[in-house]
Amino acid sequence: SIVDLEEMTGRWKPAVAPNAEIEPYGPAELRSAIANGELVNYYQPKVNVQTGAVSGVETLVRWQHPVDGLVFPDRFIALAEENGLINDLTRVVLSSAMRQAHAWQEKGLRLKVAVNLSMDSFSSVTFADVVSDAVLSAGVAPQDVVLEVTESRLLLDQRAPLEILTRLRLKRFRLSIDDFGTGNSSLTQLRQIPFDELKIDQSFVHGASRDNTALAMYSASLNLGRELGMEVVAEGVEDLEDWDLVRRTKCDLAQGYFIARPMPASALVEWIAAWDR
Ligand code: C2E
Ligand code: CA
Ligand code: CA
Ligand code: CA
Image (tube, rainbow, N blue to C red):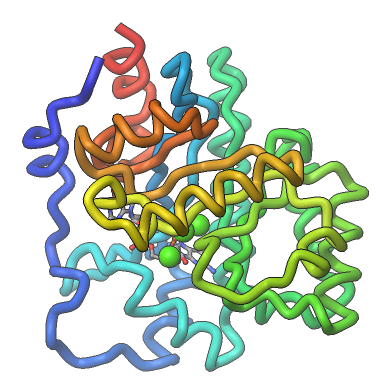
């Protein structure tokens, strides 16, 4: 059961193109947006490549701007990081995702919910408690929560990030290494932290069946993840060729426009019903 890409493309078309040449936002505007509840979570399914089962969703934040419409995170995450707003943003996104996860569970829908964390938050040792308080107070088990951190920003040679990741792992959170292949983690560093999941960057997935360099990166990442006992996710599965590749190579999970676009929580239950049909 493959979702009609045209339909999904049309339905969630952004009001503002992600790279539109318009005025950048300022920190004051973002600060009040966070405080006033203008951030909304979208959710994109991760599916089991062999069975098609929906294993979980990734939370992707959007800014529902009163004038500009739906604004994508590439226009405000760095702004939040540069202006000391990222912890507030993370708290808002995380608590809302956890309320949602709990609501889905009440409906009998047990999904692993992934949230993106900024490496900027990994300097304060209390961060592990901030995360776990938000999750536990929503009544969600850490085992059902995936924390995604981007490989290129991982600083495993520094003590605080290593310690915080280890603490989170001891609290039974699932740790995921995002955009894998775009950073330069050494094997030694990777083995220091028990990541549960490895997400192969979309640049090594989409079109890889027609690009030998991308394919080499894809295969190497998949094998590394397997060797280290991680669940491997292919990101950026955009078309049938990408989907065939991940099936043929037996990647564990897949995520991408070919399966579903990120969508509001209200659309997810309906999407799953249609997908499972
Ligand atoms: P990411 O974590 O790598 O998330 C995947 C991005 O790829 C998302 O973009 C998603 O919409 C997009 N995507 C999904 N499937 C496909 C596909 O098949 N093809 C293509 N070309 N793209 C696909 P989005 O939502 O614009 O988010 C961009 C980045 O912003 C994320 O990249 C993540 O690094 C960051 N981000 C999003 N939400 C949060 C958040 O709550 N906190 C933090 N710190 N960062 C966030
Ligand atoms: Ca991510
Ligand atoms: Ca990614
Ligand atoms: Ca990315």
